[in-house]
Amino acid sequence: MSVDPMAYETQFFGFTPQTCMLRIYIAFQDYLFEMMLVVEGVMLKKLDGIPGCQVSPSQIRKCTEKFLLFMKEHFDKLFAKMEEMLLQLVLNIPKNVLLPEDRAQEQYPYSKEEFQALQDELQELQQRCRAEAAVGQALRAELEEQKVVKAELEKILQCFDGLESICREHGAGNFKESFALLTQNSKKLQGVLKDVEEKSKKMKQHDQSM
Amino acid sequence: ADAGGGPALAAAPGRAQVFTTVVDTFLEKLVAAGSYQRFVNCYRCFYKLQPELTRSIYDQFISQLQTSIKEEIQEVKNEGNLEGLFNSLDKIVEEAKDREEPAWRPSGVPEDDVRSAMVPYCLKHRSHLRRLLKEKEEENRKVAEAVLMGRDRIEELQQLIQARQQAWQ
Image 1 (cartoon, rainbow over the protein chains, first blue to last red):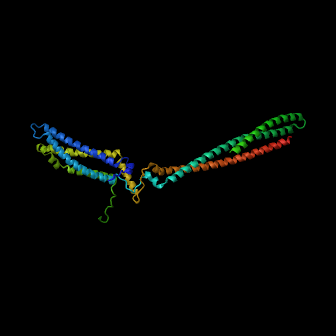
Image 2: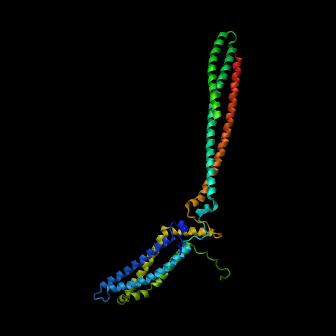
Image 3: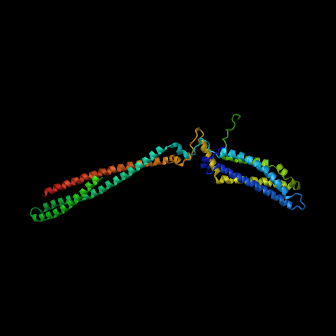
């Protein structure tokens, strides 16, 4: 006779039905024995108080054993019946019933391979997100550099425009001063142009490595 | 058979009700088995001496036994929240009543069983990642456009500067 472990029921109730019944059986049995001892105790006490009593304690003990034996027999039979009914009708989950917590099992019956494929897909998506994040970072870094370079180039352009307006204002008369001014600015310009060239080079290198 | 206009069929008793009924039946039959007659038969010697006390002892014995048994059952019900669980289970069984095929049961291999339980979360995660990826790609596309425009502008500025340089030669 194979014993049904009732694992699914245990999952639902939080205890094994058979264990529960066993606990109840032992408790009931204990009460029965306890009550019988109390009964015997009361009788013995009463007999103690009767002088010249015909009935001995061992006789009472025999009575108790007789009654207890009888009770235990019926108790066991009746309890077995009760246990059977409870395990079948109350503490059981019919075969066609799926517990709500297990719905995913029937909704998503994924095989090992299908599950692995899903995991692989997740990993791939994560990698692509990381790659996009890196690209975004690089793009934004270049944007920042461009800002700086643009600002400097615009400054140079302003210098040139400034020169033109000064020369126009001062006309041919102040040619020497104009020329000196020119030379100064020229040197400045050369310095700035060098900077810009270097930055350009750096940016081109950066482009190639992306 | 019900006469016309009789009361509707009572719903099948729930597990809680069956539980109570089964336990009560057990107790009834036990008490019936341990009848006073039987008690007296066993304790005949004492009964002859003290008939009234015998009756009183028996009554107390039966009453105490019943009380203890009922208390134990109540304790078991409270500890395990049986009433609530019985009602839940009744509902779950009722919902599955149209279903004939046997339902899924744990395979005994936790790794296999946990897979399907995880699938809903994985699917959610996947759609989240897909959305995220799309957003990032869109964002990067815009920034890339700005970068290309910036490069064009810089080239433009460099050309203007060259032109000015030449004008001043």
